[in-house]
Length: 123
Image 1 (cartoon, rainbow, N blue to C red):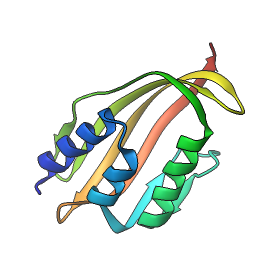
Image 2: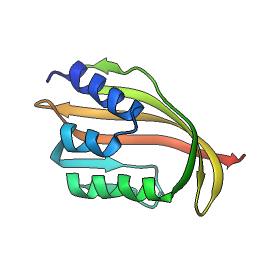
Image 3: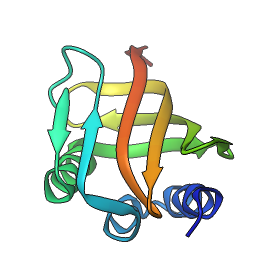
């Protein structure tokens, strides 16, 4: 897959709520994932660890009120998307979040992702 195909497939799977399938199909085994400084999972390395991080997040959610994912913007070997989610979390209550997600692709697989966000207050 070229980078546009990887980007389009990731967006499709995210819009369908198939985040773990996206990791299985599109991520390289040695992927690295970065969250903002101070986040519980600030740095994660390896496909299994990234998938586990995603599953932990899914388990922390009580209810998703709305979610959206923009079309990708591709440049060379990187692409970015904007994700928005309004969810009620088991421990923190209802919160809305908007993030910019940046992905690096090599040989048809995502080798790195980084997320830029600030948590909003409870709704």
